[in-house]
Amino acid sequence: MSIEWTISEMPVGYEDALAVMEDTVADIRADTSPEQVWLLEHPSLYTAGTSAKADDLLSAEFPVFETGRGGQYTYHGPGQRVGYVMLNLKERQAVPDIKKYIYQLEQWIINTLQVFDIVGERREERVGIWVVKPDGSEAKIAAIGVRIRHWVSYHGISINLNPDLSHFGGIVPCGIAEHGVTSFEDLGAKATMAELDLALQDQWDEIFSE
Image 1 (cartoon, rainbow, N blue to C red):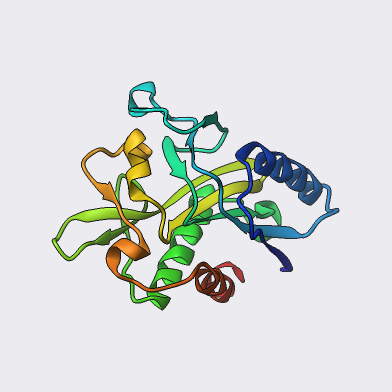
Image 2 (tube, helix red, strand yellow; image 1 turned 135 degrees about the horizontal axis):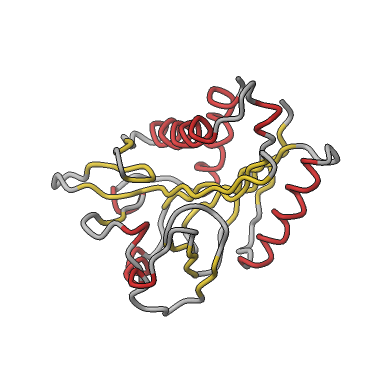
């Protein structure tokens, strides 16, 4: 199925991005727009998903936005690639299945990380994609939070390329206090944002061509 890719070179405000997604979801449902993947960065901010707990906001040093996506608190900021994925699941799946869609997003991230020799893994009871660091500790390198409206998806994923990891300190990321966060840079993996974008596009069809 035809996908339109958009890559924003400059950071996009969260409320602006949300308005664009809302309009695009309506257009996809009305069959007046192709499905879309939007790759962007946000200025530093926190978002609270539908399961967010007030105690997990430790320090509101950046703006906090309530959002309708699933999940808890997360951080977005420069050096993190956000991918907003807007697909018509009713058209793509014989029986619309949110769990299958999330599994596909996870595999898309895992396959993309493999391009850069990073081993990303799923963990039961833990959302997102995880890596085992050289010291044996586990840390999250990518987050997933989606919303579905009339079987059209939006929101999506975020992958830490080289953000300031200290900025995650203002929240308990995704409600998981016992494990940290990591990034390409933290792991010593060399990549530019453009190279990450290309890998995301290259790995797309293998996962979403069904």
